[in-house]
Amino acid sequence: MNSGVSSVSSQRAAAGKILISLGSVVLIGSSLAKFAHVSKVAIQLAAMGFDGDRLPAIAILEMASAVLFLVRSTRSIGLLSVSAYMGGAIATHVGHGSSPAQPGFVLLLLWVGAYLCHPQILWSFGPAPSAARAVEVRGS
Image (cartoon, rainbow, N blue to C red; front, side, top):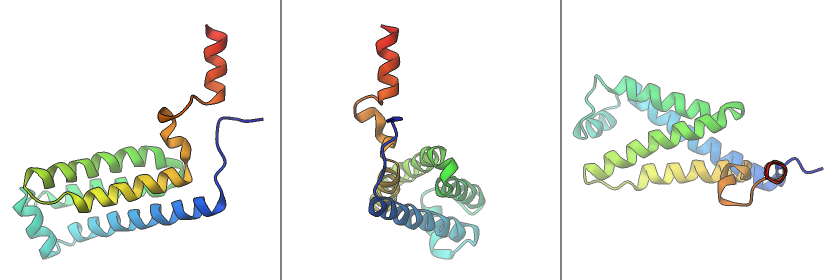
């Protein structure tokens, strides 16, 4: 009986877990650098309009997003949260004329990791799950 949830091979799941862990570690490390007011980070963020008083708030958002994404039971809200956070980072980089490659790469890493572990995450790009299709047929 197919419940609409596709099974994932162990190699694919392992690759996804590695990417999820790696991306989360990058975000957690970045937030810790903000909490610690590492001079290079503080100077770079100050140049983008985020002075020292705003660093703890940014660090809290980044840490919370990373932890929500890292925990399997909160991964979907975490993916939404890290996507919003990294989208803001990308927009800030573009708005200040610097390359958005670094935050864009981290975001790509997180999405690929999530997709490898949870292919249903991109459900709207494929056929409707069989359970939803059955409801649509009966409701017609």
